[in-house]
Amino acid sequence: KRTDDVAGDGTTTATVLAQSLVHEGLKNVVAGSNPIALRRGIEKASDALVKQLVASAKPVETKEHIAATATISAGDPEVGEKIAEALDKVGQDGVVTVEDHNRFGLDLDFTEGMRFDKGYISPYFVTNAEDQTAVLDDPYILLTSSKVSSQQDVVHIAELVMKTGKPLLIVAEDVDGEALPTLILNNIRGTFKSCAVKAPGFGDRRKAMLQDMAILTGGQVVSEDLGLKLDSIDLSVFGTAKKVIVSKDETTIVSGGGSKEDVAARVAQIRAEIEKTDSDYDREKLQERLAKLAGGVAVIKVGAATEVEAKERKHRIEDAVRNAKAAIEEGLVPGGGVALVQAAEKVEKDFNLEGDEATGAAIVFSGIEAPIKQIAENAGLSGAV
Image 1 (cartoon, rainbow, N blue to C red):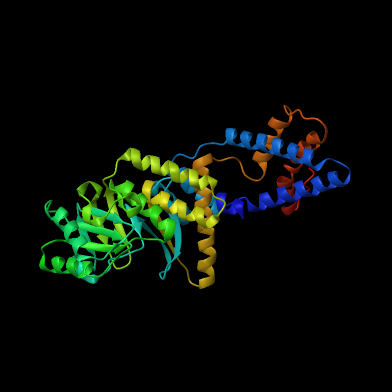
Image 2 (image 1 turned 180 degrees about the vertical axis):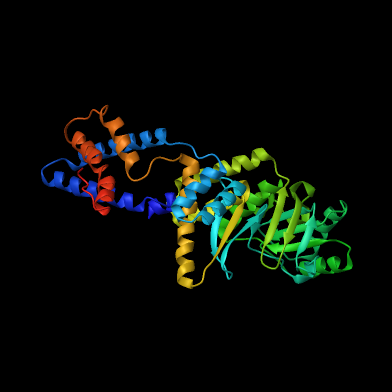
C-alpha cells in the first residue's frame, strides 16, 4: 500500500522483492543465522542500492517527459496529456485530484489562489446575481478563531475598513447575533460592502488553516489566546488580497498580500510535518494545505459509459498522477527489473561485510533478480536464463 501511495506504481515489483527477502531470510534464520545481524546486512545493502538507483535516475524536466511517464502508467495518451498539463500548472507542491464526472470523457479544472470549502453565511452578501457569488476586489480580510456576535464588535470593524473605501471579508468561527443583520443591512444599502464566511475545518486543523490564511494574506488571526480582541483591534491585523470570490459552498482568495518569505517558511514547516506524520489522513490534509499555499489545485474529472469503467479509469489516473509526481521528484530509471539488476552489479563488487551481515546483503543482491526472473517466466521464458 505504501508503494502505491508514494509512487503509484511498482506494487508488483515490491511484492515479488518482499517475498524473496522473506523466503530467503527465514531459511537462513532456521539454519542458525542471527536475525539481528541478517537485518543489518539487509538494511545496509538496501540503502546502498537506493542511493545507486537515485544516482542513476534521469531527471524528468519537460512537460513532454511528464506526459510520456503518465501515459505509460495509465496506458492512455489522453490521460498522460491531462496529467502533464495539470502538473505543469500547479507545480510539484500542487495537488491533482481525480473526481467522478457526469459527462463522458476527461475534463480539467484549475483553482487559482487558496480555496476552501465554506461559502457565504447569507445569500444577502451576493454581488453577482447571475452566478450567485460575492466578488470583493482588493478587500481587507479579518481572520478570527472566535464568533462575531455583538453589534459593537462589527461596528468597530466596519468603521476601521470604511475609512479606506475597501470591502471586507470576515472569516470566523461564525457570524451571528446582532452582527450578521448589521453587516447585511449595510450591504443592502450600499453603505459598506462585506461578506462573512465560516472558517474551514475543526479544532487544531481550523487553527492551522486560519494561520495559513493569515500568512498568505499578511494578516494576523484575532484570538483571545494571543491577547487580541475584536473590539480593540486596528487595521494592522487585517490581511489583504487582490480579489476574493465567495459562492454558496466555497471561498477563493486570489493573490494574498503576505510576504513571499513568510509563505516560503510556512511551506517548509508543512513539508517537515508531512515527512514526520505516519497517518495517511493527516498527510493528505497537510498536502492539501501545502497546495493551497505553494502551488494550486487541479481537478481531473473522469466520466465513462458505466460506473465500473469510471471507477477503474479513475483508479488508473490516480496511480498515474502519483507516478508522474514521483518521477518529477526523483527521476526515471529503466523498468522491467533492469534498473535493480544494474544497480546491484555496481554496488555488490564494492560491498564488504562479514558474517551474518554479509549473508543478509547476499539475500538482497540475490533477491534483486526476482522481479526480472518473474517477468521472464510470465512471458513463457526461463527466468534462470
